[in-house]
Length: 362
Length: 66
Image 1 (cartoon, rainbow over the protein chains, first blue to last red):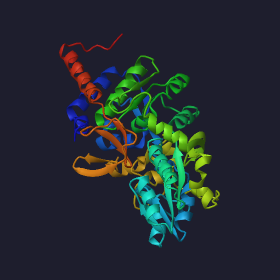
Image 2: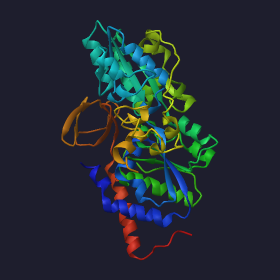
Image 3: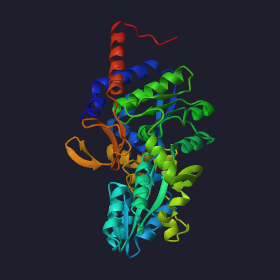
Image 4: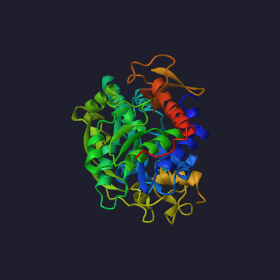
């Protein structure tokens, strides 16, 4: 397909890799933020093309992985109720909660439906007026325009049986939290390309300046990632710390204005707990007061309960880039995609899932 | 709503966020929403850069910048 295949060209990948080798004189640690980038790196073996002195650290850009356990448990509670249709992106179905998961709730008779778009959930509410339809609104800024539109349309249609369990997370506060952590080894970032199609990259220059880190907005194909790494290395080798845009074919500095406008209309910034990381201030989105009627937590009167993470699961360390998936003792043995201990082994953007699928024998 | 061709598979997507998109354009789609129009000129720049690099290499200019 156009704009896809040519970015997977092997010869050009080798050419970019050679240039990176030529320029690199010192060890560098570079973090790719997005889980989709992690998958491409592991699948195409991009890290193996780079000089050994460059370490790619996998970031927490997997929204399924960082959805707080409290939120998963609330989803399970709502989904188990009679008269509820619980609609969710497919990825969330096998994420382990404290005691069970959505797929098991479905197996026991809960009406859990997989949807592709949040608008499908709005349709379900229209088609099932006697039921309460709840949508699990998980995702980074890339998904927020979609959930915002769903809430907006539900309000326009005057739907009384539709609500959302919102668990959106924001990227820049996560980068700030990572950089201000004492054992942070990250010296440069490949910023999440699709998040930036929505938000632009005007938020990054203060971060680049404060922590003296190059930040390069990067795409998802092998040539994109290699060029992103090249641009970061060029900056690191010359002591620069600026924001650049490798993914210029899809990302503009100001981002998508109509999307940002609707996000600000429907949502407000709230504190958010990140599973495996802890609470990061001002790092989430919640519904604005004007749309409180669509807030499932309020509607169903849910509060935070005691949660229980698997004692063995090290996904928090993986998400912070402290360990690689295969360094976890449970990897591939007690923890597999069929029987995951944590979300990183289940999500299509999870680092553990990527290593299991493409690199089990390392 | 518009029809998007994903390499042979046709799906509907909401075009509210890319009002400038025309039939024949390529767009980035996420969970049923087009988020950005792919810019053809920018798309070619990666390959122009690689071509320049190749030409420089052929000239034997392989030294790093001072």
